[in-house]
Image (cartoon, rainbow, N blue to C red; front, side, top):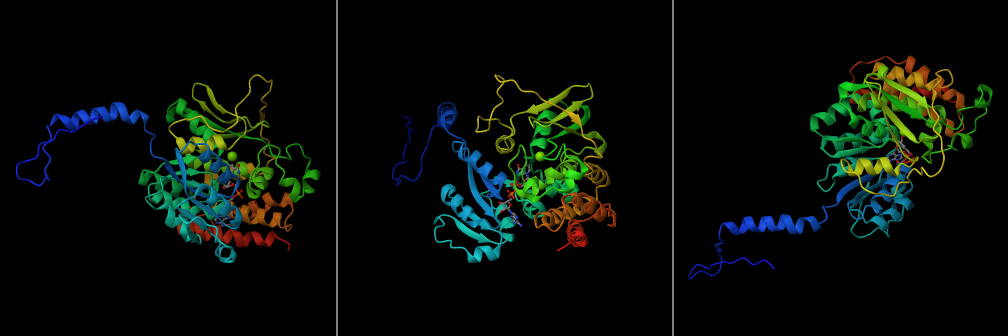
Length: 425
Ligand code: NAD
Ligand code: MG
């Protein structure tokens, strides 16, 4: 054991320590050399926004398996409050946020752990992400509802692990500018963008020729136009590979998800729409690729399991062993790629158009799509009408090249109203 030798000045009551000057240096060296290697770094405190969703629950599995490296400091849910309560009992966060005040009012919170403070309403998301106790925010709320909390997190220089692609579709230019201005890290969780982010590390930005987004093609890849007209809600919600929330599952069936991802990639990687390509890859093992100027294509592969991109965003720049499934090369499997036919997948064209146009286009497309998907799920719009309805709203909007955030929110409100003219109650 290390002892400090001290001399007490005569007649003093022991208040002053006189320590030979080399001792502190010696202590520091011993501390760094002997003690630090055996100490765990402090846990990264993660605010999991949208913790009851498909991404949110996968994120909690990653946190659970992190051996204390990660801690859930905040959890949020909109309406599945019994699930939020169960998560709070398991993870004991500092805050549990119920964003729907009506549902929160009616719920029995008596079993909420004592150390967890209940906050109600969407403003609580903005408040919590700004707190000093939060290191990283997982933006896993679905739709445009995720915008304000992501914005507040970046404004407060928090690292954001972004699953909520709609934030970049609505306000990509402003959000990425904010991240740059604040020096905040914006890390992709979407599997395609995580793959591109990883592949980009193989070269310099000026050496990038194009980004190739892979798409599974969804459940109706081989359907005829007549078959598509008969698609039911249950069929659209049955994705062959990914188990996701209802909105993104319908987006994957219409290929609007890929359209949104084209726009997401345009802003996240600061690349022109003409340098983005989409290729159909039914196995969803190659999550996306970067082609460099010399013709090299760098891809990222893994079984389809969202826990891997979530974990990579949580631990970046480190990689750690985790819970995600691994590829088994002891078993034969094949990878197929085919060009994405724009006639078969008309949503893709909308994605490229909006990525090219910038300004208000993304906000209008996103809101129209959110409204159309909601109407489809309620049985008020046919599956095959979703994309034409979005195109029509996009075409009838008065494009603004450099909108403010408030203007984008107004475009969002306007497009949601416009889409109603397509809906038959
Ligand atoms: P989900 O529907 O399963 O979960 C959504 C979460 O958001 C829930 O916790 C819900 O309570 C909360 N929420 C819903 N409406 C809200 C509102 N108005 N205010 C606050 N919170 C609200 O969705 P998901 O599949 O987990 O997707 C979440 C986001 O991640 C989406 O933006 C999606 O595009 C993106 N994403 C998902 C996947 C996936 O595999 N699920 C993959 C890539 C990207
Ligand atoms: Mg994706």
